[in-house]
Length: 162
Image (cartoon, one colour):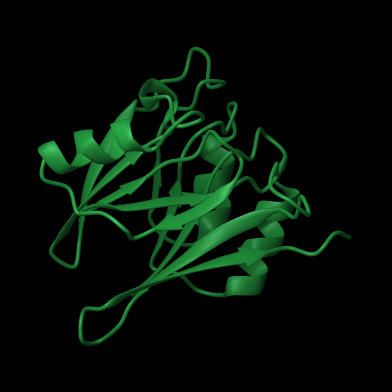
């Protein structure tokens, strides 16, 4: 199973189109918020099922604040992250996810990619496709793959500047 995880596109969907063309067919697209009204467009171009949560810039949105998924027997929490103060620390989110029985918590908001498998809950942040803030400031996303044995592999990928 191949899952594309993105966040913080802020209605600038050109890089998302590039990522979809580059990655080819995926089984699921997860968007972790700040779509700013482009959720219908994203669902239209994805070519697969799409899960989207609301971000702090998704004003007046009907998108859910959080979603709970099950992927290959693992419980996954989707959130933008701002309610957990992830810009300062990821520990509040990790603890909340652990207490609620999740094995994976995916979030955005910081515009910096993270794969943290050091605790009882994997913390996954794809960064931002539109306004990256990490060193080098390359737009980023994560490909999550679940192999035939059920092992999960996360890969941070970067788009080169045009």
